[in-house]
Length: 129
Image (cartoon, rainbow, N blue to C red):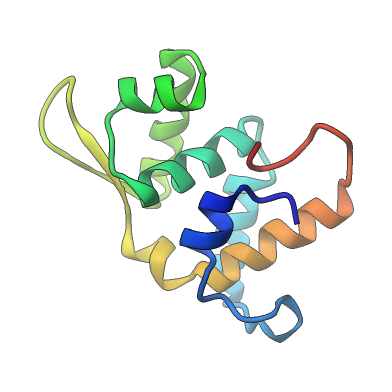
């Protein structure tokens, strides 16, 4: 599985075996559209992993992930629109946190990612470097 230790050991540490996961159909469709159906899917997953480890602002995310500030901002907007992350604060230094929707449905998110990574097993294409 190509998750880095952050995702594997922090976000998905309590997720049972892939074969035993009982997915929520509604959340499966939502996660599929956000994390597999659009450009930037890898960036959005990296953002979720990063803010689960340590909530941070857009600039911190840009530095940590090595991506352009505008790229991070665009993907944050998509995650917010889908209620997957929440913003605390006002202005430039807003901090981002995963919502309960993400944390309560980690097995379903895990199932989506595993299915897609199996289907598109391409060198260099991983959710998390």
